[in-house]
Amino acid sequence: MNPSTVSPSPAAPGSGTGTAAVAPPSTAPDADTGRAAGLRSAALRFSMLWVLLLLVAAATVLYPGFLRPANLQDILTQNAAVGIIAVAMTFVIISGGFDLSVGATYALGSTIFAGVTKSTGSVALAGVCALLAGLAVGGANGTIIARWKVNPFVTTLGMSSVIAGLAYVYSNSAPFIVDQFSFQYLALTAVAGVPLPIWILLAVFLAGALLLSQTGYGRNIFAIGGNEEAARLSGLRVPWLVGSAYVMTGVMAALAGMIDASRLGVGQADVGATVALDTIAIVVVGGTSLRGGEGAVWRSAVGLLILATLTNVFYSLNISQHWQLIAKGCIVVTAVALDSLLRSRRT
Image (tube, rainbow, N blue to C red):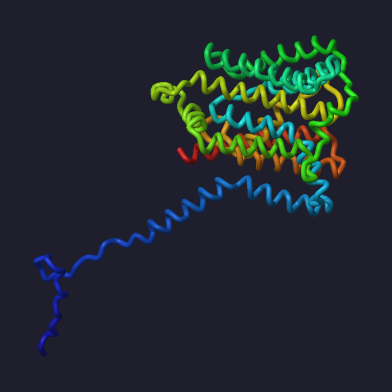
C-alpha cells in the first residue's frame, strides 16, 4: 500500500522555505481589554452623575412634587450661595489646599453688606465694601499659605476665628436688619422669570468651568496640585497661582453672604457655621480629589445637585436637621474613602 502523499504548504513570499507561514497573533483580546478598560474608566468618571440620576428618580417617588418648576427653582435659589463658593473651592482643592474660613468670610460679607447699607443707604457702596473684605481675607490666606508656607488647615482655621471676631466686633453682636427694597434687589429680582441668584450661580459655574478647563491658568492649577515641586521647577509662579485661588474663595464667599443677606433682609455675624463643610462636601462628593491635581467644575455642579436634592427630600419628609448633618458628614467621609480606594487601585 502506497503511503499517502502530503503536499507541503506553500511558502510565504520571500521566506525561502516550504514550511507553513505562522499567522500573527490576534489583537482582538487586546482590543477587548482596551474597550473594557475604557468602559470602566467612563463608569468611574461619571459615577456621581449616575448617582444623581438615581437620586432624582428616588426623590420623585418619595416626594411627587420634586420636579415641579417652582420646587426646582426654590432648590437652586436656596443653594445658590453655597454653590458659588463651591466653584472657587474647586480651584483651591485641585491646587492641593482647602479653605475652612469661607463660612466666616460669608458671615463677614453678609454683615458688612447689611451694615454699610443701613448706615449709608447705598447698596452699591455696601456691595463694594463686602467684596473688598472678601478680597482682603483671600489675600491674607493666600499670602500666609503660599508665601510663608503655613499649612492650609492651620491657616484657614485660625483665620476663620479672626474673621468671625471681626464680624462680631463690627456688628456689636447684633443683626443688621435692612428694610429698604433696594437691599433685597439682589435676591428678589427675576430675569426672564428666573431669580437673579440662579443666574449668578450659572454664570459663576460657566466662568469657572471655562477658566479651569480652557485656559493656561487652569492647567497650571492642575499642575500645582499634581506636583507642586515639579511645577515650581518648570517655572510656574506657584505662590501667585496658589494665592489667587484663595483670593477667589474669599471674594466668592463674600458675594454668597451678600446674596443670602439680601434674600433674608438681614446681615448677621452668627451665620455660616456649616458653610465650609457644605462647600467641601459639594466639591468632594462631585468627584474632585482632596489630594489635589484632579477634578472639574462640572463635578462640583453634580455634587451641588446631589446634596441639594437630598436636603430637599429630607425637608419634604420632615427629617430633623440634626439627622441631615449626620447624613452629610457620612456622605463626605464615604466620598473621600472611595476616592482613596480608586486612587490606590490606579497606582
